[in-house]
Length: 168
Image (tube, rainbow, N blue to C red; front, side):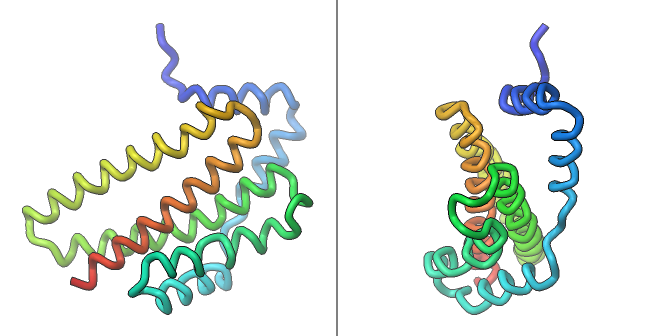
């Protein structure tokens, strides 16, 4: 019988269990932090300012305003902190992505809505496959940070693209 678990998730769970209950509790506590209102506002303001230039929006708004500040001095943060900082930024971008997707669907006819939904499902599969490949290729703890950054980056790009589509 095949396991229903994602191999990367299974490996991560095994590592956490081997490190003991205190580590698992620390990871759990770290993952409960939500973005602050000021962090959300920083990204929202940046995206609004750069809404007409997707590339500039990505260069100005992604990582610099939340994740990099959360991580602090390069090389000083733990792997766990870096993953959590990227996760916090992802929550902000995911919120924008969902708002922009909803706004886009509200402006479409039935045929366009079906195509937008198919496009979004394909993007989710692309994001998951692409970001998972970091673990498939690297197979180490460094892959966790790269996966977290990848999910944040892809979510940001998608949020900005969906916002761009709502303008037409």
